[in-house]
Length: 253
Image 1 (cartoon, rainbow, N blue to C red):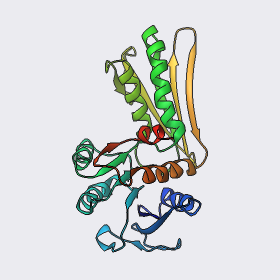
Image 2: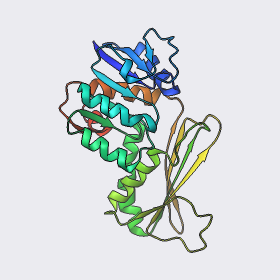
Image 3: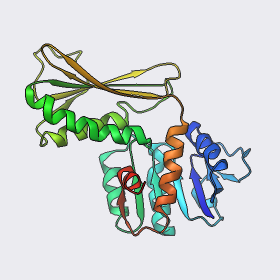
């Protein structure tokens, strides 16, 4: 039985992970951590990592960026593998993640869904053909009105995939309201929409003079992210220290 410590247990994604675990053989949540310590799912929820006494095999994290520093210290001290799903991390935090991965196994992904991770590859193939032929590249992401970071981690991951395909020659533009100049052919525009209960939509637009190609992904339920996180946790247990991604999980399917 794989034992999960769920960080961010009472958030929307934490609850989704709890539901998926209930349907998954060979895995259980032994404890949770959340500012809201209400416990309705059959496992204790603590207000801080320092209060956790249960033994676990892996941590699954869907919390907030402000909590990641203490989470990394805890994972490193306990030598616990970590599935890190929180987005909006600073450059300093990302550097700390890489450093911590020298001591424990960490799987970090901007998006845990199988479809999005396939999308990351598809847009690279498209960029090599279309951007090389003069198409402009734009990303539009849409999320619910409670999401804290913008643009989304997935939008940034998509931009990085596009840029990687083009040899790193592009730069990112997040806001054009104060700009009064022609679009730079070497920019990737990233726009964020926040409203209602949108789970997550991402459009990668390749705009040419006479045609437009759009590659899209829409998530209709948080269950797709929760399922991916649980699969990642099962994959990560027993792995040596290092930085992993969902591509590593997909490769084992």
